[in-house]
Figure 1 (spheres, rainbow, N blue to C red):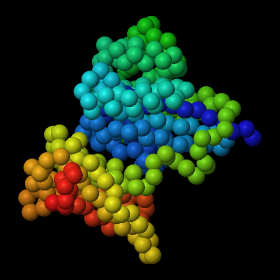
Figure 2: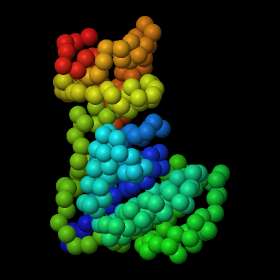
Figure 3: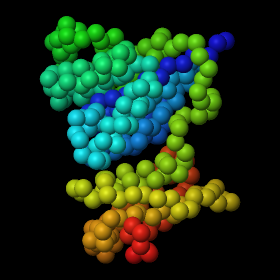
Length: 285
């Protein structure tokens, strides 16, 4: 049986549900989802293998950063277009609760420049929402050459099978890029670092989380199967230390506990996580 392949980039505004969708499609927690902007900074690849079909899904940063010129967002912009350029099909994910036609048109006009098939997927169309999308689809069909439209709910897992069937239908004869047992391009260390970063985003506020770098120092499975991890939180200025620690160490404890539980859930092992705060280019704080 010939192997078949399809590469799909997931693009959309921050919090449209890209990370949640890729986790649902792959049926594993590989991409961090968080209400803070912008959780996904790197390109995370999810691999879905169904019989002789391999679908590679590129989870990209929020597309709203393509129009922002500050230094951090230039890097996010670069990662977005890297994922798009690798793909055969662009999946534009839209949160139906905040539909803005002018904004969607702005994104589509930019995406159509790369001359690839585009599908528009409306997310969060939950039972309690029941929002009619007919008028939006009619306008977009009239203005743009959209390959197909889908309505899904990641929350209720509605419409996910339809997406998978569509992907399978559009695969083409090609060698697989990943082995049958591989589900992502990221290793366990990356995932554990991202888990801690996600916990920082959840516990802390404002711009501080984005200025903290999580660096792995030790990662080892013990003889009893437990996982021991040591991480450094690299901060820019010493004033961040008190904020990250919190009163009587309450914040750092929350970060550690949330991350430890999340890593344990993903890697299916009891985790012992140790976190240290370090000032950039300085000794331990």
